[in-house]
Image 1 (cartoon, rainbow, N blue to C red):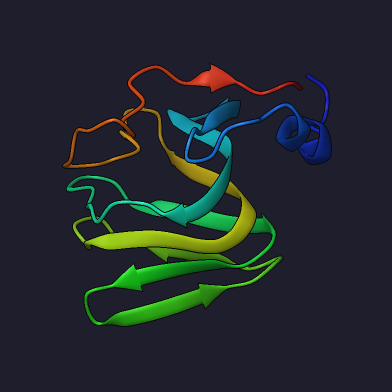
Image 2 (image 1 turned 135 degrees about the vertical axis):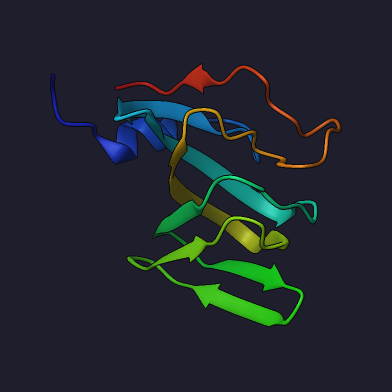
Length: 121
């Protein structure tokens, strides 16, 4: 196993809101994604989600307010909490979540990714 080069992994991703797998451990996926604009309001009934910002600023809208997550910071959305990621400018995030986690949680639409691609190692 080689170290994962995040710059290379993000360079291989050309779409927004399309997580790519970069690693796996203990039933968890480590994913890289580029985000820009608004995602949908959704929740994950059985899974917590960790968003680690690699580059840029991510805003996490919650029904009770909004959290700003800057470079080098992470935020955990607890299971069952409705949220809406929002990125005014492109942001690169690393996600840690169970392999079974569907990106759109309790919602299915054109943004749902049933099968994830792998990013360049």
